[in-house]
Structures are given as C-alpha cells and as structure tokens.
Length: 332
Picture 1 (tube, one colour):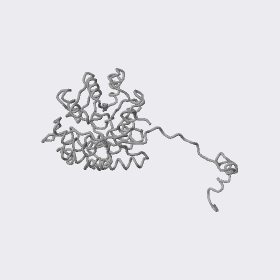
Picture 2: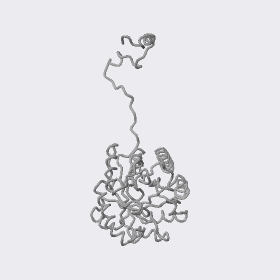
Picture 3: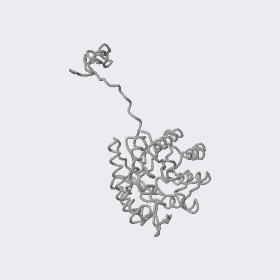
Picture 4: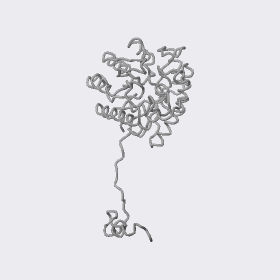
C-alpha cells in the first residue's frame, strides 16, 4: 500500500481486534460442522396443477385465443394434461360464446377425456351460472360418479362493472350440503378478504363444512380483492392463507391464476406451501404482470408451471396426490 493516502489511517486502527469469534487455531483443531442446523419448512412435497381452459366471462374480444367450442375446449384440456396437469375444471359456451349449463356440451368435453385418462385425471365440476340454485347444481347430479370436487363461491363480486354475483347463506349452505351429500368435495372459493368471515360464520362455526376444508383463493381480477403490484399480491394472499389456516389448520388451499399477476402466482403458491395452483385462460388474459403478452393457449401455461415447480424443489403432483389432499388435508 505504498503511497496510499489511507495508510496512516489504517495504522491507527491496528490495535482494534477484528476476526471471526472463533480463533483460527480452535477452528482448525478438529474436523467439525461450522454451521447452525436449521429445521426444514413444513410444506407438502407435491404440488398439483389444475387447468381451467375457459370460464364464463372472458371473450374473444378480450383475448382472441379464447376457445368456445367443445372440440376446442377438449383439445386444450388434453394438451394441458399431456404437459403436466393432473386435473381440470371447465365451463362450456354456446354458439355465440355465452356461458351455458347445457349438459350435452359438458358430456362432449368430459366424457372423451375420462375415457382416455380414467383415474389419472381428476375432474372439477362447474355448478355455477344457472337461473336458480337447482339449475346450477344439475351438472353435479349429471356427473355424480365423475366429479370429485366442485366450487362454491362464498363471495359477492362485481366484474369490470358489467357482471355482478350476489350470494347469501341461504344459497351457500344448501350448495355445500348438496355437494357433500352426493359424494363430491366442495371447493370453497374466496375472492375477497371479507369472504373469510362468511366462511367462518356460515360454514365452519355452523359445522356444515366437513373437515378438512378445501379452499381456493381467486384474487386479482377487478372486484376480486385488490392486487395491483407485488406488495398487494404478497400481503393479500399471505393474509388470506394465514387466516384460513387458523380456521382449519389441516385445510388444503389452492391458488387461482387470476388477473394481471398471471404466472407470478405459481411461485407464490409454491413458497406458501399450498397444495397447488389452478391455471389457465378462465381467469387470466396476460402471461405476466410486467408484460402485455396475451396467453396463447393453456398447455404453455402448464409447461411454465411445471418448470417452476421443479426448479423450486417440489414435485408435480398426480390425480392421486390431489385426492389425498382433499381427503387428508394440505399438510404432510
């Protein structure tokens, strides 16, 4: 350090000891571990991927790649299963692209897939959108021996100022009871923080919902919670996860790929130790929150999700893994 302008200053600091707490001679005296042991985090080894290729609201005017016909929907599901999904949830559309509960259309989608995959695929029903509760529940009856879970949305929501959905305890409790009685697992869907209160009052405290409970968080679209940036994404989802686990420590929770966050929600679900993610074009238009890249197809989303699951050290789950979560809860 010849001619260094700092040499004189360093000389004044030589009387101050500065080393690791363990003296070198002690450290090297005998072979030993030098790091503090840390417990592994409590989360499932497997992570299931469910695809939802089409919903009730997103139109071709929103995303030109959105599918309508039963042939298109079926092909999207088949490609997604080949890419790594183990389950699917689907709506069907009429000839104009509108949502319908036409049972024949459901058969055109579901039957060939179950015939090909059998128990290697888990089918999630769609008891939503009917003029009456009885109308909405008809698909659950029609596919009694096929559907293994079906959503019940405990939320009053408004979508983009055009579509509104209002619900009451007189709708939710009979829905849950009916689905359970028919041998299907209710998937309790929450869109907002306040929905946790309704779940507690209407289903948990009343004893109506059989445990372990199974929840799906679908937040991020307009009117579904408030996720506008990474901070609100982490805060909203971690808050809801924590509070639901207080209601039922053994519950299973799945995160929905909904809204602008796109695929960013998959690693979020993995890190929180959730049982899986529902991904697809039902609730999302964009691949990523920071790009205006429109989703082209559902299988590409599944392939991305599989890569993330494996990169973060969890194993892509099978339909049997999914069934075990529904039966035994979300912790191993």
